[in-house]
Amino acid sequence: MSAPVLVINSGSSSIKYQLVDGETLEAATTGLIERIGQDESVLTHKSDGERLERTGRFADHAAGLEAMVAAFEEAGTPLAEAGLIAVAHRVVHGGERFVQPVIVDDEVEQAVEALSSLAPLHNPANLEGIRVARKLFPRLPQVAVFDTAFHATVPERAHLYAVPSEWREEHGVRRYGFHGTSHAYVSRKAAELLGKSPKAVNVIVAHLGNGASVTAVERGRSIDTSMGLTPLEGLVMGTRSGDLDPAIVFHMHRRTGASFADLDDALNKRSGMLALTGHIDNRAIEAAAASGDRAAQVALEIYCYRIRKYIGSYIAALGGADAIAFTAGIGENSAEVRAGAVGSLTALGVQLDEAANAAGGPVISTPDSPITVMVIPTNEEGEIARQTAALLER
Ligand code: AMP
Image (cartoon, rainbow, N blue to C red; front, side, top):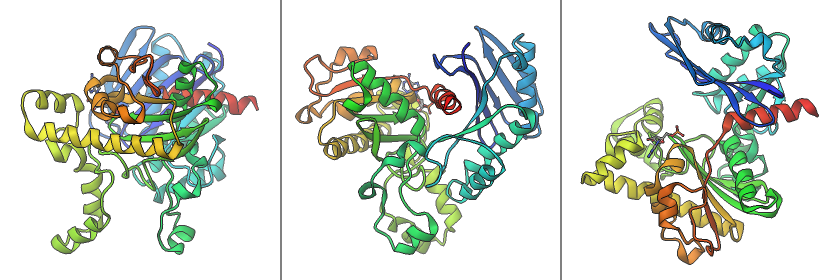
């Protein structure tokens, strides 16, 4: 392996990790630690086709990462002998300051902590992983790679909200955007598939997973993206509403007396496809729709319609696109959603090839389609490792 990087994605009760080659971006090992802090924690470790599972009680992130180190040893590939160049951490919110990956020191740690008010669900958990890893691997550089960073190039016309100036100047209210490592990776791969430099093409990336966002990438730079101050804005998602009239929040507060914490919870965790269908998982929703469930059919229409509107508006924002790339769980796997999102955009230059779409691509438009439509598996950990290796080479 050249330039091996241990990539850590630390959530509130789970940690995902991968040992990734910083040049080929391939993962030699992947692992997941779930239910940290609960009675029965589970660690799943996969390496060279071998799968190892450990259950126990991992009281906190430190216990979880120690179990990860033990799993590498048990699998016969101890981390101490992996020649790691760094431990890289996914951090969701980098605010206005972190527009590039950085090597973590105490001051960076404090700055990430200060950004927690913008991402209360994510940054504290990301930071916990960083703190524990700094103790566990004191001699290795710890690098933070931010989900927001790729969108630092979004111009004012797209990132400023028309709200009072003190909201913007004192409280950080602006569009930041998320899924940046995915949009960066997939837009670069889309250019590769077109046989062109990223600087020579305009690409629209639709990252459709449990969280979902669309980004307009102009010659390699993000110029607009559907998520905003937080990952709530934009598309309809598994449990998030996406775009809505903000006055709905005041209306529901006045009508029901619900607290802002309740309303925050409702829009982030109890809305989206869950609220429309009773299911979060797209496979369950498609199966329900296929068996005649009217609510599921309408929900899929709403889901695809929102994506279609964003794609249409980004073709306008870019003044024309060379490619549209679908990625993440739903984007990579659902021919139905892809067809629902772009199948009717013939007047805007999209000629979908039904058979190629059903087969899953990578190219799913006809050879003479002015805009090439693609399916590109994302690789966020690979991109984090690539950016980390590039930072350390500088
Ligand atoms: P992600 O957050 O990227 O892991 O994506 C999760 C979403 O992808 C879930 O809603 C899954 O139902 C959806 N998904 C995964 N595989 C398929 C599939 N074969 N067909 C349709 N949706 C899928």
